[in-house]
Image (tube, rainbow, N blue to C red; front, side, top):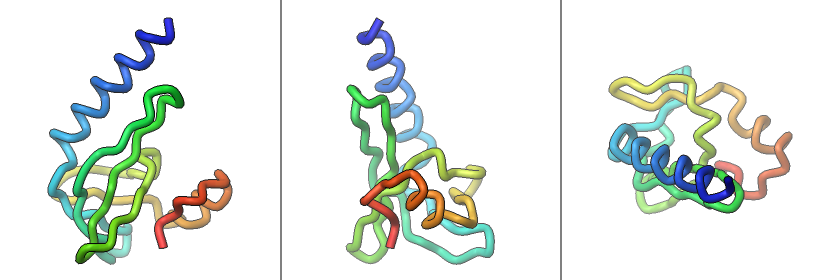
Length: 93
């Protein structure tokens, strides 16, 4: 059963790469955070993140923070508060 879950995560991550790579990441108020550079995954924990590059500085944001995807990737307005509540030390700064 664990192998099936890992396979599902791999397939989801590949689909997200196709959908998100190269797109601008913004907050709902239009503030740009950078561009999606790659998708990071941890199979044992079933976690997927997007790595956002802003002029050479990379930040890791969990895909659960995405509100919508069209021409741009829009994130929840309370991004840092949500990450702090989750206890994630890799918060977007």
